[in-house]
Length: 182
Image (cartoon, rainbow, N blue to C red; front, side, top):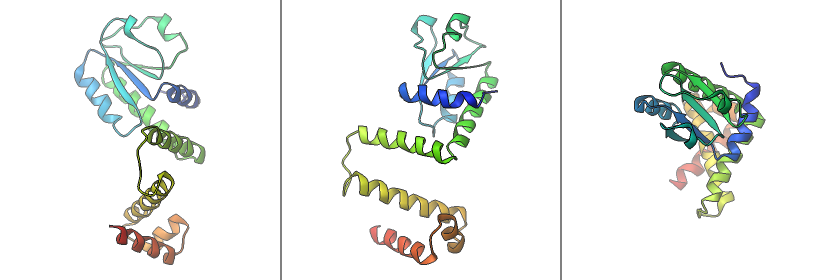
């Protein structure tokens, strides 16, 4: 089981290592499953199958102990976060890690940290947005909040407005503004 107190330290190391996950396994099938589980996370996955010399500690290191051996010297290096397991057990550990990380993002601080990372990544790509980055992100956030809240409430506008902390009139205006843009 992953210790929740390690999560904030892991977030710091992940931010500095560009959200990298190194998967040490010789099983292509296991690697595919790990990538699939983490497809909506902000991680970039890399598969390592060779000797320890090619391993660059940092970020999250997933080690399939059924196909790979790691020296205790590497594990105790204090660099990155190591998650060990054999086959399906490693898959479960990865699911637990992602679930724990997502639950942390439900807090205001965790969500702000998640949002900062995503915005920073988008800004670093030097994209051009209609009306500028500020208007673009404001519009996207407003649109996503309204549509997801409507979806969550089954289209019930009163409940949607309540969830969003706005009046039904404001909700109606935002919905009309959105339909005019489409």
